[in-house]
Image (tube, rainbow, N blue to C red):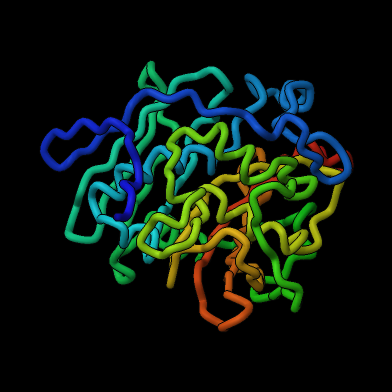
Length: 307
């Protein structure tokens, strides 16, 4: 008999599902970014004027998985899409609550907030592949804008694709490189919403599956996206993970290619969007897509023009 996906307590009020208060854990304090410490290091965060070392944005995705499974069933892991704009950084020890509000048979709005009401993220959760998502709408708008003069990401070319024929795998016990200096097992030890489906074959697919918050880790195992000048420090601005023909499986080799789909800037950052296709190496099956919007702090690049 297949086990239940989660034991997370959920409160239901009308079309809105609310999860419990959680304290997301910081696993990136030792992250190495562009040859040095990242913004997840307290000293680096302080130099950039941040209130503290933020927890990585995808960590919050796990708080939505029980809500999405309650709303959509196991199909969430087969063709679910979580699309999020990150609004406020979360520091270790802070409380976060996630909500999901159904907007249709295969769609919902999602939001997370701190205990004082400060918004953490907002977006959509869908299992309907034709339903609009927060980031696809946002990307389409940004692609129409002139990015202006760029000095850190000026070498990036929209449409450029990076890929190779080396399969990438997430296993339980191997650390995932300088950007993600932790193993899947360590992640599961600290994840806000644990599921037996992540460790056991007692699930609808007969194999342990990878949590949605780790999809971007697998995408990054293909190496640096493209030529970004440095050293400089960056962060995630937006993230969308989609199971196209999922789930993704532990120990399964995947091929990953990344394409630059947009560049731009704001007052504090230059930023770029990449779309990563994750393909099962043995079959050629397009299993998942990761759409990532990354920002690079202008103040962290020593040669950035001051005028």
